[in-house]
Image (cartoon, rainbow, N blue to C red; front, side, top):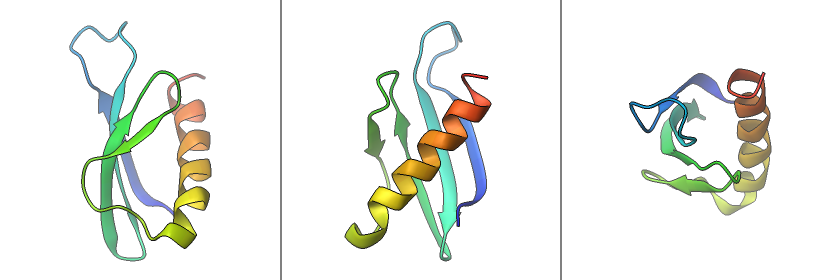
Length: 69
């Protein structure tokens, strides 16, 4: 489960799409960029391969809820 999810716009002009995010999962902090096309680019630690798809789905849901609502 994702904990302590945070995001902020990449650009001062908030009309431009693109967000930086961070969250904790199993005691590890993950950071990355969420692009307007839904692409996720990890900028810190990369999640384990067996958990990455699940985390990406959860991240997409959180971004849809917070950004596109």
